[in-house]
Length: 427
Image (cartoon, rainbow, N blue to C red; front, side, top):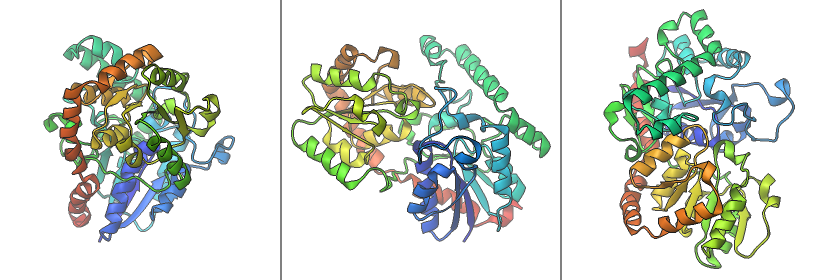
């Protein structure tokens, strides 16, 4: 059996698919070491994974933060880790991982694991890049919608010239903000890897897209060698409490199916008036509301018979019982909604959400409402159209069993074992 180092960084949406792959490898008898941020150590260990921190504790570099809370963003539209973090943090991560003993036979990591190619080169073993959404493998052949640029991209009807210009701007901007990673490339003699957010992150051995081919389109647009595994479907038991779930289910069962509203990404901590406008929209339609929100915002919402507010709970228990879903367009939430044939209204605001939302809408699987237009009247009209669309409902019912049959973690392991069980061929 082989030894795998799994580098997983970011929010739970970025991390959970990597947990699923790590668990599946471990269940097949491989030794797995998960390297992640301090705020995820407890959850990883609860899943039975051996986990180590690859960052310094919060109190070693800044004021203490709430347990498992994401670091505040300096840019509201993209993760702080997207460019490797600070040069000091990136160097600390590299040094931590390069000192591991015994050495791994394989290194795999997600979209924020910019250190992965460096660590794999240090140990002279294969690097496997695991993208959790299609934008993680963006190229001219796989055009994607980018934060801040999505408006002009859509207005130009995805014109090739605008797509090329947008990709060039993103490459230039991210190169400027990844200077620490580029300096490390030069120091280690790895300039040939290329741009650390693009070809320098993609693998020459194996790329995995831990998402559904239904959302992607032509697989030939991805850099070779890439395999699309399907969704991984891990839903850890640390998401919510039994009592909170019981209360939410009691509310759902006490009346007509409610509309569920939730936010992801940066909007989770910066909701603005999202929940207040949502409640007004439901009431205009004569619908009840189930709101999933961070506990810090619960006091901002009224106590009412037609409203239940809760912290995060397993979607697999809620989605079969609600009428529709309104959310930010995170790839994992889209997947769970499609698996349950649930009509969705997507309100993207950051990261990969614009691209995920556009793909779902283009395939007739969801509707999109821009965040700037998120007002009760527009929400109500959008939801009314969504709930009355029989053709859409039939399409969702057709897709649901296809999504349910995907076994992304197992498929990923099948590909990974071809490298793990033959490490000598990569020396």
